[in-house]
Amino acid sequence: MAALTANADKDTIDVSLLPTPNYIDEVVWVVGDEPILRSDIEMARMQAEQEGVTWEGDPDCRIPEQLAVQKLFLEQAAIDSIEVTESEIMQGVDQQINAWIQMVGSKEKLEEYRKMSVAQMRNDLHDDFKNRELIQRMRRKLVEDVKVTPADVKEHFRNLPQDSLPMIPTTVEVQIITMQPRIPIEEINRVKDKLRDFTERVQSGRTSFSTLARFYSEDTGSAAQGGELGYTGRGMLDPNFAAVAFNLSDPKKISKIVESEYGFHIIQLIDKRGDKINCRHILMKPKVAQSDIDSTMVHMERLTEDLNGKKFQFEDVVSLLSDDKDTKNNRGLMSNNSESGRTSRFEMKDLPTEIAREVSRLAVDEVSQPFTMVNARGKTVCAIVKLKSRTEAHRANMQEDFQVLSNKVLNQRREDTVREWVKKKIKSTYVKMDERYKNCDFEYEGWVK
Image (tube, rainbow, N blue to C red):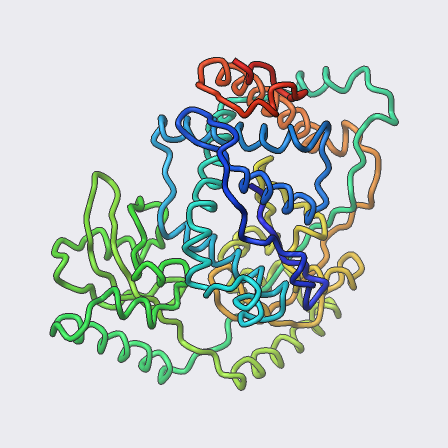
């Protein structure tokens, strides 16, 4: 089921547009062992209307069919032992709730409309988010071996008339330098002292690790679960964090303080299972003082003047000064990672908001004024960006846009693969539906047994 997303152009929204949570349930379909309720269909319809979704065919037929297809993916995900960790679920749920809060204007307004606390909303959203993530992972698994060759791409577009080729939106390439404001040693010591106090309180039996994590951990994805991360492989964790966590052997003991890219942690082992570990942690982030932000911004203002005056090369400054580990070894060039592949080109809508705002004002080769942003690791940084290139919207051609055209063919083949899988799955799955749906014009055949 599609999720509501925040509209960045509005501070508030009419709460009447949010889906009403209360419906009378009635089982109208059964797919495998899973029921589809009338309330599920009504909720999906309301969310589709909210997001402007249109349907090819009768929505009264296509909406329950879409839900039935989702049940097929969920059944197969269970068979294939595809999992989603509690930490991942809670992080996704928190993002959804934060989006709703942004839409209606405040946490209090959201609770007033929904007639439940945020904690109750988290509980209600838990299974919905888990199922959506399982469906996405199942779809990815189905198409993981689908590939296309350059010959496939050329053959696909060879006989298409020019006006049938896709339009390529305006794209940009962006280089970035970030500097993290200096954090005084006093602030780092404050955080470490707090974590040492937590360790002493747990080991003395005065309180539990999970209770402290719920109240004090700054990892919003795991705090609600008492700091528990779920079974996780070493490669999914920060290297410094993983080195300590995987060396723990006694669940009754607390780790030493660990510094990662996200801040400082203490860790408690829960269990090990093969090459995965389940542990709790408490994360605390040293606070950046405004005075330190201001002094870093002044330094970067002088740097911008020197760069625009061609006193230094942007790439040289990246290697010497940038704190951005994701781009430092790539001459500051930002990378756009998507299911279609990795590229240095971004549509403006795909850039972080703060960066897009600056880029929209720049000419090619111009460097922005410094600005602040929160990076992917949750840290406040000062940044400047350079517009490396801008390619205006145009009709795709094989010479300049081969990767885009290749992705288009690949995505089509993936969709065809998924459709064929759904057709076969319907044939082998028990399906029962209310009589009112049996004369529907469905997208897939075979639902009516």
